[in-house]
Length: 244
Image 1 (cartoon, helix red, strand yellow):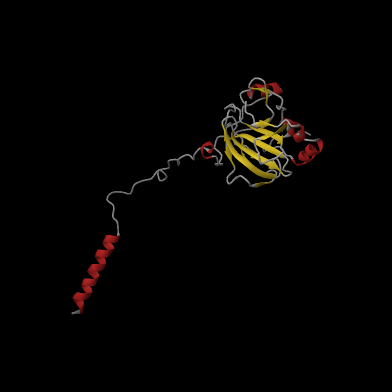
Image 2 (cartoon, rainbow, N blue to C red):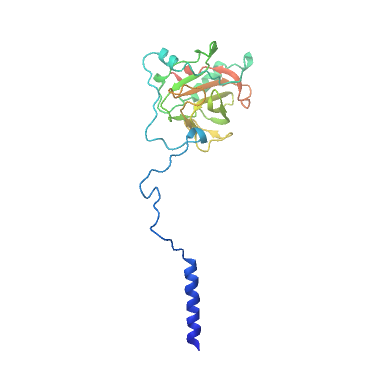
């Protein structure tokens, strides 16, 4: 009497196992990775605004040699203004002691660029009669952009002329440091974040109205009465502060 009962339990077990197993007809399908096709390209860093692994083929900066006049000609299409309001009140202008303290703290904000590679573009006329009031630092696309001083991030801003921008306060909270035309921000960069000098905040690019073939950093400094008003200040020329 026990033999048929045992046979019945085995039959039920076989039915359950067959239902749990999925058997596909035909040979297994090959995926793209299985046949050696390249994986899809990562999204553009400009679209997602965060850093991506560097491309296999670097996009170099336009080769500009010779005189500062060549630099001026290459960058004449860059007409951005870092500040929405230029504060001309005498009381808020940078004093010599202010500038001495700032100069001791400042470092060139583009990796690998030496003081000898800087040109003073602060007084250049852009867009007709307006002074540029910033330092343009040429470098290959994707070159790390570094925080020029200790401080904190005030604003991450995407503007039509400046593209991806970082507005930061220096450690004294008297100056606003502005970094424009970035192709991407450093991963995790956020408003209010503390910054240390030399910390990567983005990469050199051509967002905004920068000439497409001339990747560069638009670096500007302003003396401020209130750094939380990141759009307002009295422009300061970065060139003599970075050039020994």
